[in-house]
Amino acid sequence: MPNYNVLFDAQAAAEEIVPRVVARHRSKGVLTWKLLHQMEEEVLSEVSSSGQVQRPAATDDLRARRPVLPQRRPTCVVRGP
Image 1: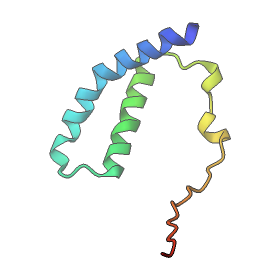
Image 2: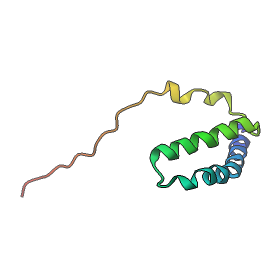
Image 3: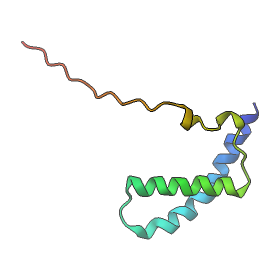
């Protein structure tokens, strides 16, 4: 399983980079979803640019090919007595 080692390598690289990214953003105040996604992109960018991890070709553009489906809201059924 060649992808198995890639996942561990990616995790190790991210664990090294995440504290630096968090330190850069710690003073920005309240953690928002926008800031969280920005930090996520920075971590992925740094992991990618570090050259420590090569993404398997099988995962290329998975997000782009998968359709976005609307989420179903839970329905509440009220039954009479």
